[in-house]
Image (tube, rainbow, N blue to C red; front, side, top):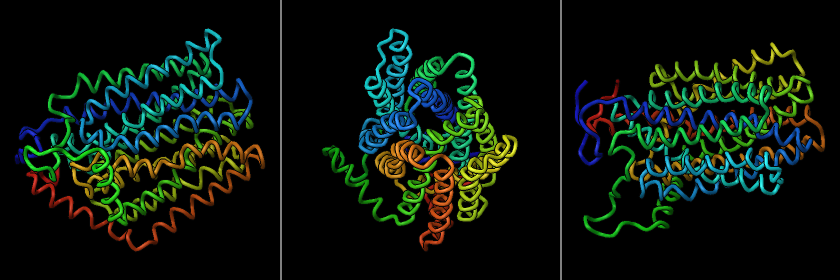
Length: 439
């Protein structure tokens, strides 16, 4: 395949899949470590304190800094470059993660200190995850890979990390205890830092020059960059609708994974192995869905794909746990939901990358992610208080109903028609850049 890319983008004419492979490898190891922690940390708090409320508080103290710091580091990612931000923040995440088992072994780990350490992990994870996401479209261009295929592969990586991470996390917690699993999480962060630092080619992931800055003139300041991101996002009704919808579903998903599933596992007697099993089955099915999406999503109607995916991955998970069904039936429902959910992120990711100019990708993506993630810190906290007050089953039923209404009502809004028109805009941009539309 031939066709050069403009020098302004700084993308060499020769096709190379190494950048995309490096970014995806860094994503899979850091995300796998995070998913291991999703099993280990709530179980550690549950078995040591017996309190669902404290378990939700720990989840809040990790995710609140994640969302806040990620929101404000978008302009820095654009200015400094995502590569530097990625490897430095991954290394910063590893240090408090390894401190948790060490301090517990020394009998020095109090609850306030644990909350501080998970807050530091969350604060470092936010910019690191953002930086890797921002490098995906550049890596796709270097490899002459269609954007939906690249975001589909990123979705595969995310789902694969969830599958492996949750399964490994459940096994580690059952065999060696939750603190050993948290130590593995620290090692994954360190490995992700090494991959980004050493495996990506030189020139990859550097800051993009501001088109609005005159040659030789001063670059825009931090707050101007930050304000430009807000201004752009306000002018994109489709992106705002997606962000609000995903924000609500993320809150429900956070409540589900960080608290409702662990409480269900304990009350049902299935134990921590079941947490890894249901998560692993769902993740494996989602890998299959994402793989198919990577191949065919750019040929399908996006609106139908997204709404069907949410219908499968949303309410059924909550309701099947509320029914106290046999574990085999639960696994089937989670598998179907994971398969449908595997189609969602590749499409939504492609829409974002298509509609946002490259020079603003860091700040707009940071703001969009942070607004979409703003409810995640509250998910476990609210669910913990609700389960304590009314019990597990009413909370599961309520969350399932809210999930169903949110995704279906959002899909009826008129701006959703734009989701199938965005692809034409991306095609024009790719032709202007000399990148083939198919790869």
